[in-house]
Image (cartoon, rainbow, N blue to C red; front, side, top):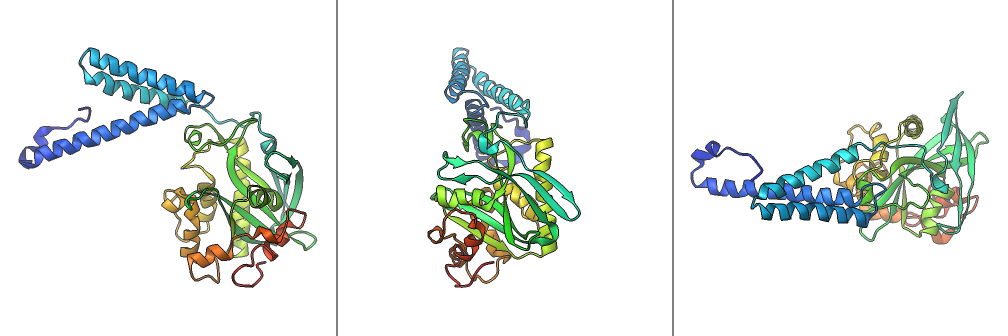
Length: 357
């Protein structure tokens, strides 16, 4: 087998040696099989390569190795051929570089530009689309001035995008008091930076097909799209953290949003996604950081279990109560200029009967 081991090491194992031998071979076959699956998937979903063509190339390569191995009665041709194929796919992927100058989709056309001066953050290119459907909308990019001292609260958003609770999109929103004393909010979502005609795919997200972008927009846009257009269940959890911490987190988020424009990164379905990026910022405030490999982050729909375990949302006694109380009830309001205010005064008032400000 291709796993090298020294039988002498196990001479004293006696009767255990046959079992150890079988286990080592089994582990070897499992590793080799996973490598084969990864290589086939890698070429199938290779960036800019037609999936059918990629899969066809993978089948041809593996079939060639198999036929050659049978012809020469040497299984090592198949074994090492697949490892070599795996290495080629890996090297090809590592040679790819993320870019910030592609032909972006209309709703991804601009990135937020941030200026900090005299205690005020001025945000240009804040997305404020008015959606009637996902393809029918009125585009709008606006500027928002946010006094840092006016930042009041961070809300963690969870959009359930699957019947299984483990799959969700995670975002955050900052509630603040503007220069006129009015309450407003700005939402931030880590997403794939889609090009024109491009659609998100979980599988393609594993193989460097997309860049990562921080979309900064009004709640009417980023949350309204999810609550009233996609009609996905959305929960908004107000995190119980101090205003100074809210301010630090806001500055950290804006700095990363800006940094991604200067030094773009690839999105990755597991390791560099919406949940892991929001966790990156929250961890800077947490006394005990949470690993991005925590199953509640990998399966992002479970992130509210972390919220409940850490007791950062006041007034709830169970996970069920948490989910029920902070589920947005879209029957109470529509998408309009008062969306943020009505979202909290009418959309989050199901269980306790108390207003959420």
